[in-house]
Amino acid sequence: MAEQRRSAYLNGGRVERTTRGVRRSQQHRWPAAVTEALLMLRQAGFAGAPLVLEQAAAGTVELTWIPGRVLPDPVPRWAARRSVLRSVIDLVAAATRSGTGVGSRLVSHDWLVPPMAGDCFIHGDPHPGNVVFERRQPVGLIDFEVATVGSDITALASLIFGWAPAEPLPITPWRGRVSDADAAARVREIARRWPTAHGPEPLVGAMGEFLDWRAGWLRLLSNAGNQNARAALLHANDPDYRRASCARVADALQEG
Ligand SMILES: Nc1ncnc2c1ncn2[C@@H]1O[C@H](COP(=O)(O)OP(=O)(O)OP(=O)(O)O)[C@@H](O)[C@H]1O
Ligand SMILES: [Mg+2]
Image (cartoon, rainbow, N blue to C red):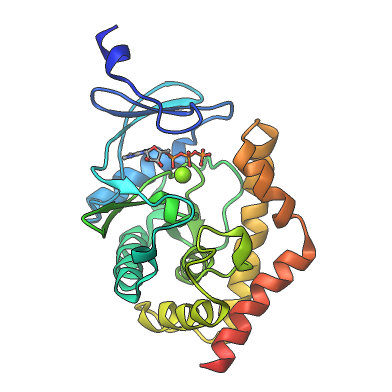
């Protein structure tokens, strides 16, 4: 009861603050492979991700709290600064480095949707609403339910997708904050700063692989009643949208 009084819903009702952290309740199951991989990520030295405290039922899980706030939609003006982008690149790159090799050490292979090719545990959806900030500095990543196994280059593609962004601007939290030219420059900045160099062609290919995988989990979440996923799926299912996102990355890298 005392816990219930202290609880507050943090989104549409799926995430709730508890005394120890946050509790997610959803229609679909929380994947066991993510629980195991989050522990391995922590053991490998990445402290900016939550750990699972308890799994009460298939779709209910309690996680540790990461102090700070995620960015609203649309993002505030300061979030579009290049210095912020650089810190976010470093955070996601650090998580990806700690996730290297985790795939083959896992006992459980229960993911929400089939993973991508590779052996690296990756967040998979590091958009501005899933990065925790403290004093305008990115300190952590949350919302790991679709986290998966992929490769270094698909982690890079997912970061470009969320933070350049790669999608046509009007439908992203960057609308009014980033122009097409800024977005292209941000694609190049992310690719340049990422610790591993990848050529334009493999990177555009990885973007295509990432978008197909993303459409898979959006479909699953949408079928389970998630309204945000349902809205995003309308774009994700459109071949023109997929082509446009890949073309934005290809053009940006060609200009550079
Ligand atoms: N471990 C955590 N630490 C700190 N804050 C969290 C944590 N988990 C969730 N939150 C807060 O709760 C909000 C919603 O969490 P989350 O991003 O996991 O779900 P969601 O994106 O709303 O749901 P979904 O993606 O399933 O539709 C976040 O925006 C953040 O404010
Ligand atoms: Mg989220």
